[in-house]
Length: 305
View (tube, one colour):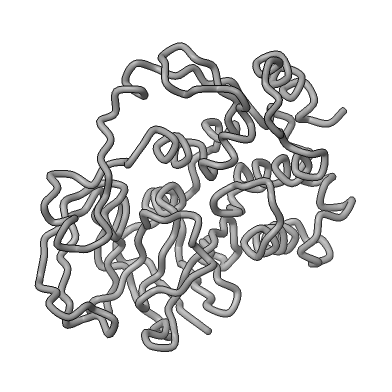
């Protein structure tokens, strides 16, 4: 039986009065694969029930680990391996009073505006829930047609990612700019987790070579220095940006033994693997927190194009 079927039947009950479009059969299959890949530690990035480059790379990484034919597609052999995870793909989440209350704050686009905020928290409830459940706000809307998401006690369907198991300790990290991935490896060099990453640009290429982790900061402040950015706007000045998920480096900064470069989170998870960075390695906030818990100071970081 399709692992989503019981939950989709529940979805029909929760949203029976709505005429809004929900997930098609093809979308349902893609979402199922995204959740299973995420729980297997081969992250598709921000889940959206759509096929894209991040999902193809997640499938390829999973196929390599399981010694399957590497196709980047959801063939029968790949589904068989993914289906070894029998836990429900979706779960019901009940909104709390704290969810509704926030606080939520509109985030200015410019650094000067950001520097005036006491914290760089979430802009709205959908953004906060998207980060918690590793998915786009639009996917949450599609899973919950007719829901207002404005009152405590309202029940929502969300990806079942709360059961993701902690990662073991990594001996090294491989960042591949060509594939747009960050991979964790054990002491034998075997990969066991992979995440989509933004890894530089023509103006700020990934610093190829072998580096080490110098330190890790969670929920960091950000110190903006326009002299370090080729695309800084005229009149920009140095600024201190408070911590929070919408901070320019997100929820974590992994400092490397090359000045001004690191691995960090982002306030724009939907752009990971799709847009360029200023040379640093960007991950979604939820993925970078998994990496933070898996590595230690001194871990090797190999960067290649």
